[in-house]
Amino acid sequence: MRVSLPRPFPGKEFLFLRPVLGAALRSVDLERQPVRHRSMPGVDEQQAVQRRVARPGCPNPVAIVKAPAIPALTGIRFFLALFVVIFHFGLGLVSDAPAWARNVLGSGYTAVSMFFVLSGFVLGYNYLGDVKVRASRFWIARVARIGPAYWTALLIQIPFWIQELLPNHTTSFNYPLTTILVSLTCTQAWVIGTHAVWNMPAWSLSCEWFFYLLFPFIGIQLIKLRRNGLFCAMTVFAGLTLLVPLLYLLFQPDHISTASLTQENLTHFTRDTTLLSTRFVLWHDGWYRLALYNPIVHLPTFLLGMSVGRYRRIFSGPRSSGIRRVAVHLSAFAILTVLAISGRMPHILLHDCIVALLFCAFISQVTALWRPVQRLLSTRPLLILGEASYTMYILQHPLSLWFETILRHVFHVTGLEVYTFPILLEFVVVLVAASVLTSVFIEKPARKWIMSVR
Image (tube, rainbow, N blue to C red; front, side, top):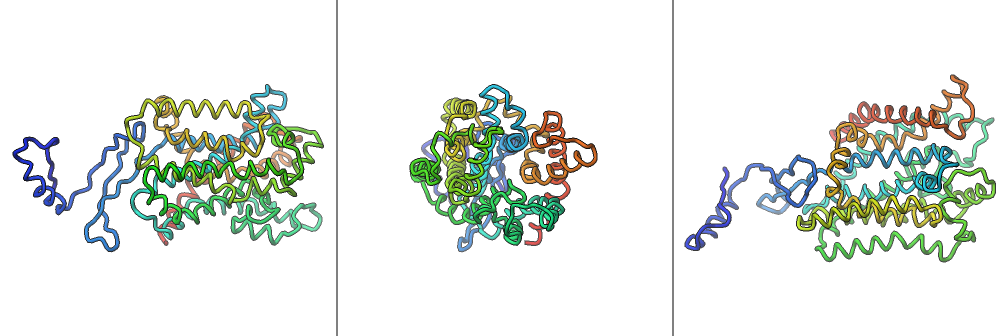
């Protein structure tokens, strides 16, 4: 049964009926109806659905509004994953390119920080409505989302692990049992010296697991905050992202000058043995690796994304659409500018700070992005690629081992220490195709099975 009242209520002579009709409306079991979100310009045309559910201890059902989808974020995920892949395998292509090109490709590691922000934003936007998150249900959903592709990557790389453990193989892993345990449990980033073992990009998943573990508990506190409190939380989290990098630069615990810690010295392609030696010390023996890889250091970035996602869902109104359009395009321009001039900037400040903060401002207003760009990011092919972006990220290293092995032993290709453009293009095509197939035929069926047996 549906009951509707004309708005505004006509005539003062009928005002005495308001309490009576209001009580009648509250007693009616309303059917499911679409809810229009005028405060969400640029979101997917699929409208949020209002459904009636009962809370424990509450005799009457309460309305829960599902957040409208923002499909452009899915398309952005693909480009972030591609950015990381090119950073890992294509830096040699721009060794003689203009400085801005070397700087942009040399800052591909910042895409991982953007992933942390995006992950927190999406979870905060989708889960932090007005109802408490069920921790067990959330954790099972996260295992179903992350686990299948991660374990597939482990299986793909098993032959190379066996080869590394053979007596006649030179390996840098002094504790193979430790490497096996941290890889199976996805805790690489927690154990000193194991953040880069076997599937090196998986260190970021150690951080994600930690974030997922804390999400239900922190989410409860964020839900309780009003507008001003949530804004204060965002400010605190933004400040905490800068804390560890600034402390490192201030005290220099590895006794390496700040001038040597620029991005061009630490990430750009080089054959300089002095720079390579400095990088090895920082990545493997210094405090620097803790500042870059420890999950606790990256937690504020995720929390910032969470709080912004919650704010975007609950408190973002429709009146400042013009300001939003200016903000989203300015933040996009600022990100590109920072990446283009990043060569002389401290690497540690870019890794989880400056770019992450700008990207947070960008995705918070992404629905105000120029319409043609939104439509492009929301096209069916990019949505498919975006859904496979996590698989693409986690499979890049295992597939590169097989790719290089086949090129060396079947096609007798040499000089694979530095990929040429044709080889990089071939690898990207193979990786994207394998990621989509893995996502469709392994990851999604496994996810459905895990969710069905919970």
